[in-house]
Image (cartoon, rainbow, N blue to C red; front, side):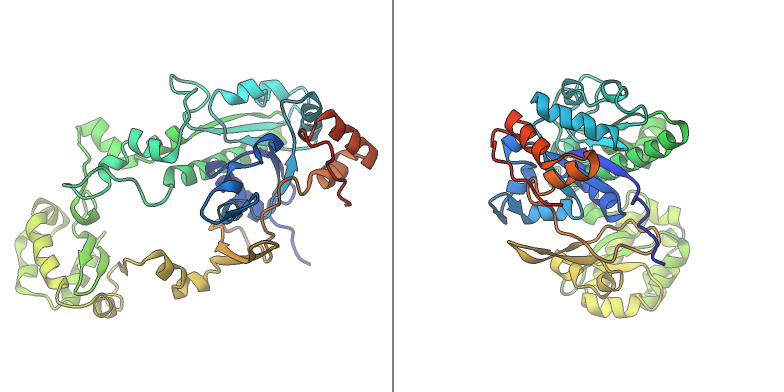
Length: 410
């Protein structure tokens, strides 16, 4: 007997757009949650549908990356008829999940206080730039801004170079995961207690929270974090990028035993016996000299030659791949990290899988939905809406100004 996916009994109304929110909910969708994506017909739906470079007529490969295994419903939440439908859906759902500016959930009346009369157990999860409280709550927040404001850029890049953002939108992505975790936790509590709540999650909180030990060092010992040469770890030596004869390699000696393995693997040159480099504290205090020796040594062979020596010796190391190289790594395939969906416009769409693993992973994935593709089906299945009722709602403007909304057979 095949077991259902772990979140198959969870239904989420997702008033989400672009990256951070959809990134959080796509993992829930992969785990079986029913993600009903509420899209604004007046704006062409989720802005991610129109994100270049690979975008055509309301579909984009950007959108595909964040919205597989979801359903799309178009609703004009500013219209009384659209709001009526939304409130009926709240009654049969576990959560309302949004990623909007911090002051918008109150304006849209999608907080717990606004919806609890419809469903006392509803969870209202808001992921915003700065949260629903505080002096920045009404400001728009984006990953790039947060990487600057939260100090991330000050520790990224070379010491003599400019502050640098991460090549990936890590505040958005981690914020999405934090929101998803918060929401699932709140749903668990609501099922236990019969009472829902708000989850006030923000990209700002996420970015500040991820400062971790750098913040602790500063708050307690006035440590001043800064950019390091070749992305070196702030305290572990050696733990950084090294140039080789043809490219780059990362070597990380997080423990003393790895240092011993490293110097043995490179042939234990005379400098390796220097008392200044014998302990982690010594290497930290004399990092310039220690790293100078290693840099010269590592330039003598190619990355492949070094990996052939270091990996069998048990030294933590890796090549610095390009993204195309990373996607064809043997381990990527072995872990099933590329999944495929079929799309009427783009054909077979390959994308990376969710790293969240609970039991056996989903065996089949469905493409991201077309705009409003499931409107009639969702209303019919969840609310018992008939074709006549559906057309009446359409004529009242529930689905936007296009009064010819088609009835989609279930």
